[in-house]
Every structure is written in C-alpha cells, then in structure tokens.
Amino acid sequence: MLLPSFSGLTAFYAAVRNGTLTGAAAELNVSQPAISRRIAALEADLGCRLFDRTHKPARLTEEGRVLLLALRSGFGQIEQAVDVLRQGVSKQTITISGPSGFVAFWLIPRLEDLKVAFPALTIRIMSHEQGEAMPTAEVSVRFGLPDPALPSETRILSEDVFPVANPLYLARKGMSASDVDYASLVLLTMQSGRRHWYDWPAWLEAAGKPKLESAQFMDFNNYAMLVNAAMAGQGVCLSWAGLLDSFLESGALVRIAGPSVTSQRGYFVAARDGHAARPDVIAVLGWIQSHDGLGT
Picture (cartoon, one colour):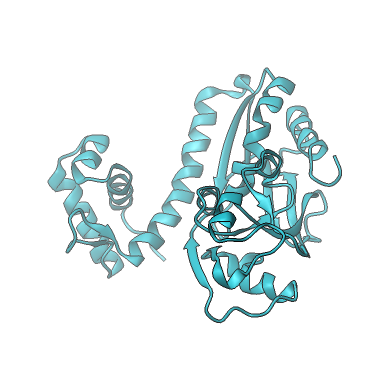
C-alpha cells in the first residue's frame, strides 16, 4: 500500500499544531495557498475530509483525529531520534516513557530525587494515552496484564482501585468519606477506561455495590484531566494505589470508605529496544524499581 504524499502529511500536521494555515505556512516556509493545496490533495488521496470547514476556525473531523493520532506517534519518534542524534551520546540523555497518569502523578513528584541521584544525566519524559503506540524510550512503563513474553519487566504498582473525592465536594453534598450515596454524586470516568482498566460500572460490580441506573457521569479522555476535575470538586474519581498518594496525604483528596478492587493488571517497567546493557539505563531502571509502591 502506497503512503500519501509526505508533503501533504507534514502540511496537515503543521496546520493542526499551529492552529492556522498561516502558521503552518510560516513553519514550512511555503505560501498559505500551497498549504491549502497540499491538504486538499491529501484529502483527495484518502477519500475523506480531514477538516470540517463549516466551522470557524475549522475543526478536525473524526478521520482527521485518527490521522493526527498516528502522525503524533510517528513524528514524535522521529523528532526524538533526530534530537538524540544531534545532541550526541556524550550528552547522556535517557528517555523515560509511561502512561500519562503514571507520569503526572507518580514520576513527576519524584523528579527532584531522580535528578539528585543522576546529576550528570539529562532526563527526557514522554507520556502516552492507553491504546496509543508507546514512544521510543530507554526505560518504559506500561499498564496491563503480566506478559510472559517480557520476562525482564518488573511490576512497580499493582491495580488496587478505590474511590476518592475532594472533601469539600462531599460536604456540599451533605456527605462524608465514611458515608456516601454514589447515585447522588457525579462519577468522573474516562472514555478509554472501559477497555483497559476499572471504570465505574466495573468497579461498582466488583465491589458489590448496586448498579446505578441513573448515575450522572462526566467523561474525560485522559486521567490527568479527570484527577484535576476531582481536585476542583467536580465529582468523585477512582484512584490507583500509589498514584495519588501525595493528594491523599495532604488532604486535598480523601479516600471514600469501602472496599478496594484488585486485579492481575498493574504498572510494569523495563529497559526497551536493546538498551538494557547500558550502565546508565540499568541504574535509572533500578532507581525506579527501588521507588515502587509495593512496600517501599
């Protein structure tokens, strides 16, 4: 199968990133009409519209979002590889990748300790959403079931799930963390969660709670936004043990009384793409393993 014109793909990608054809033209050093022609030719080649031009500014169609997701992964890996080559190996750069929720709530709070442990290294952080292609990285974290084909992986967090909320939100509802009525709360959930991990219906069933026929849900496409909504008092969210500990310790979020739900899934870390023999990679991998949430 022949790929579309590279000039069309780059024009489309630049237009989305810049938000305007003028910005894309400036980035690629061509005229605005040239960007328009390249995108039109790409749409003709694919047989679908990538932009809904009935809106001002134009919006991506569903087909456009599918293409953008693929280009972000592909161009992101190319940009990372070029950056590494330009810097040279003497810069001692190590990339750590993981799901966005893990990066935001487990890794970032520990970055200061990581920098102290490895002052000579430049640490690059990359995140991805569940279901997206994993970025190219020396050390990668994934969420899912244990994989017998990946014996070098180490589990650093188990799937232990329980509900949390802003205590002020519960107070506004006339409730406390020890006594809640889920049917009267807004349940914050994720679009992709239903396929990859516990969402509210699955959690309620596993926890032995009654099915909520008339529950109010608010849906997000990434876990960081969902947690921010919970912090802002917009509803109740599910937490994975080890991810939101800093918020629970500070009292910004409270754990709602009741059972937690577990599964065989979890977060696993390993050195990827043949980098396991590099001493610096082994050292960073060991640091992450020693700071896991399984009793350390």
